[in-house]
Picture 1: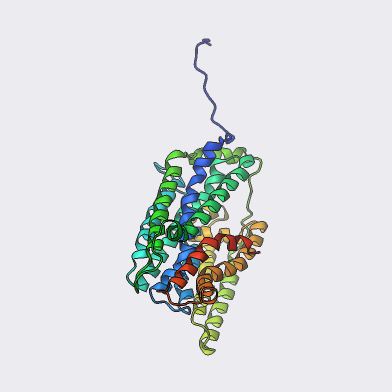
Picture 2: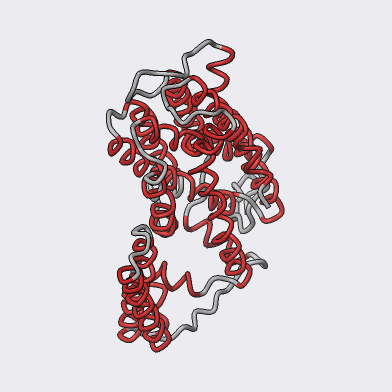
Length: 379
């Protein structure tokens, strides 16, 4: 063989370590995403009250957040797992989610009536979830196992910075830049509007930075890395069609009974949402039972999105199931805080429930500036 013959480079079978700045770039977009979340959490109740919502109306208006998260996150996770295009696997979802979130953030403080603001919350929350969920998987896709703690720590750093700065924006604009935090009836204060403009801009720019400065491995490369990895997790998909059929019957009956109790006892109408969710889980399992009954076991992983999401839900690792229980209860506290903190603090500590008063808006600014600290102190 000639000494000058070019050597053939074998394909990588192990993910190479990334530099600090490569990890920085791939996580930087989370700064923008957290700007969107923080502006929403700190100001949406204030906007709803400004547009005429009573304290009793606010929880049902906030229902967008848990419902969109419940529906969008697993669907986007499945879709991004099976996407590959010019921008890669995850980055198209970063960009699409960021664009629609930014549009909703810009429009929301100009909502002329309450239903428009509620609609913008639905769009904003759905779009944030479209951008955010693939970011979690992005770290696992791009980093070798020994660098993943650094990747998640970097994401947490940007989450913290984004939460603190974005939540405090109305307070900073009012107290350091003399921007008015009061407005005529039915209008959103300038401090909130400018905070949303700034936050939306940061969100789009930060996510775009990650999209255009990071690369992704192709599906073929990821498959090769997984085959050579000694840490890959094998899930045992052993739930039979009979098990799904039994579960479908149980959840359908429970949902129907819960709905009947709500109706007969004249309970809070918001409980119908929970009853519908319980009931709907029954037909989803009927669908899985029918699917499993007509396919061969080896074809299980080739089924559509609905089956894949429900089947994966029942075959989560034990640690994830335990975490799901913890998250289920902790989010009750988080939503209670996001929904009621502004009205509680303004009426009790600042002595005003009048959304046109300076006292109310000073209290709302205070809530925003301290909300990340309050969240961090929750057990």
